[in-house]
Length: 138
Image (cartoon, rainbow, N blue to C red; front, side, top):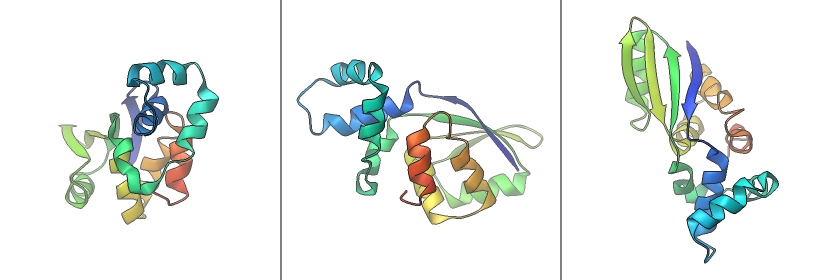
């Protein structure tokens, strides 16, 4: 099975940080977003405080993967989690989409080659969240 992240919400970690700060700040989300985009270090600090109990902050994004898997392999994942959606492209190629919460929750329940590759695919798009999920805190 092969998996490759092919698209995602821009500045995904900044979006998660905005979501986290919106609950504790009086600032408008758009103001928070502008401030965070100008300060990537702050984004890392905020996202580094991520807590499992507040998984809804991980929902404000979309990720799309190209998956090469047999029909049975894809079906296993489809039956295992309803929050990752698959679209057949023909043959053994699929588009799979979901958000970071779906990835974190799925990876926390299943330790398979697929979940390892799924989490590893986040390394560039969301490095802090990637490390968080890898630690098993998801």
